[in-house]
Image (cartoon, each protein chain N blue to C red):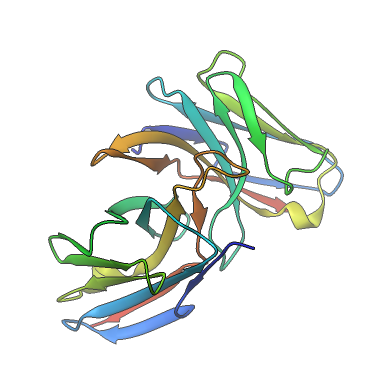
Length: 115
Length: 115
């Protein structure tokens, strides 16, 4: 258990459907990140929250993507009108202090397959 | 533009040997560099970080070096074991540009330790 729970772990959907992923940090953390990872690549930044405020969004985050963190605890990532190119692992991470610096603690991820 | 490269997509070594993985970056001035391990179907897990003013860091069988002149970090696993087989990712922090305090990951190197 990493302290970050993601749900669902796997999602298979048809093109054009909407999907929503949820991220639940076990304890309160100010900063929460969403990353996307495709096969053979490293995680790519999508967006991050400082408490409930969404401070930055990557250019990867098209208008079909929306993320929320309504109470500064859990977060959701919704993809509308899914496309096959959205197939990836969606990773949530919190920022934690280690060795006097900040490091990311990731959840296990939500794998999306768009048919 | 900012770029991170890791020496090879895959690396096979014999059990007991030392594995050496390389991370090169351009157009960064990171405050520190981090290494993560990722197992299939799981999120990355933090291993080690090294600051820009540190030359070397060790943790058990792991050793990381950081050369800010060459813009390169080397990650060594000594006395490698089959259980070390995983993908290893380097990540940079310290940029306060577009993403504030964000982390940018390399593509990863998939290490296979053969018995």
